[in-house]
Image 1 (cartoon, rainbow, N blue to C red):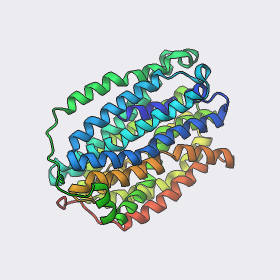
Image 2 (image 1 turned 120 degrees about the vertical axis):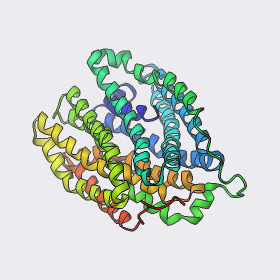
Image 3 (image 1 turned 60 degrees about the horizontal axis):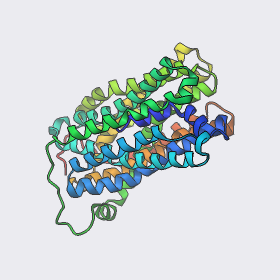
Image 4 (image 1 turned 180 degrees about the horizontal axis):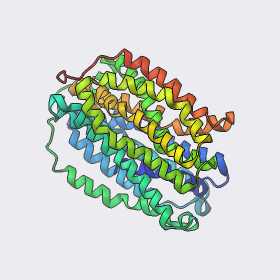
Length: 399
C-alpha cells in the first residue's frame, strides 16, 4: 500500500499535469508534475531520519504502524484535492504538501520493514527473506501501475480528466486501515537503545559517516534505473509518440512485473554467491545495455520495445534486491534503521526520485531521446566504485 501511490502517481503524471499545472502545458507541465514527484522523494530523507529514530529507539513495529497511517491519510487527501481550475495556484501547492507527507512516510516504511525482515530471518536466507520486503514494495508500484492501466481501459480520457482520476487515490484509506490492523499482530521487537543518551541519528552520523555516503552512492544507479523503468518510461514513450498511452502503460507494467518476479531468485543467488557479486554484475550489465535500450525504444516496433524493456528490467533485478539487503547488513543492529534509512533514502529519494525529472529535462534540452541513457551509465560507474569499496556481508552474522 505504501508504494501503490508512487506507481499510481507515475502512471497519472500526464493527467495530473493537465489538472494541476494547466498553464505550463505539454512537456513543461510534465516537468512540473515530476518536480512534485521528486519533492516527495526528497522528503524521504527526512522520513528515513524520523522513522529510523523511532525504529531504533522504540522498535521496528511501531515505525511500521505510524508510517502506514500517515501514507494512507495523505494519499486519500490527494484524491480529495480541488484542481487548478477550482482554486488556482493553491491546488499545486496542496499537491506538493501531501506529496511531502507521502515521502516522509515512505522514507520510514521500506527501511523499517526490510530491517525487521532480515533480523527475523535465518542467517543463510537473509537475502531471500529481504527480497520479500523488496517484492512487497515493487508489488505496490505494480498495483499502482496496473490500477492506472485499468483506469484508462474502463474510462474515457474525458471521464478520467473530469473525475475518475480520484478513484485510485481514494482507495488508499481502507487499504491503510487494513495494513495498520495487520501490523498490530506482528511480533514486537525489543527496543535496543532506550538507555542510550544520544539519538540514533547522532550516533550513526558520528560513527559511520563514510558508510552512509558509500551506501547512498551504491544505491544511485539501482534507484535511478528502477524509477526510469517504473515511472519515466510510459510518459517518455507517450510524449515521443513511440507508443499509444495504453501500450506505454503496459510496457511500464511489464518492467515492474519482471523485476518483481526475479527478486526472490536474485535473493537465493545472493545467499549462495554473495551480495557483492550480484550487485557488480547488475551494474555493469545495466550500463552496457542503457544505450541499446533507448536506441531500440526510439527505432523499434511495439514488440521490440517490450523486449528491450523486459531485458533491461531483468538486468536491473539481478542486483536490485541484493543491494538493499547488502546495505542494511552493513549497519549494527542498534543503528540499522537510522543508518540504512538515511543512506538508502538519500539514494532512492535524491538520486532515484529525481531521475524521471532529470531524464525528462535531458531529453528536453538536448533534443536527443538517447539522453536518459547517459544518466544510467554515469550513475552505474559511480555505484560500481562504491560497491567495490564495500565488504561482503553474506554468510556472516549480523552485527
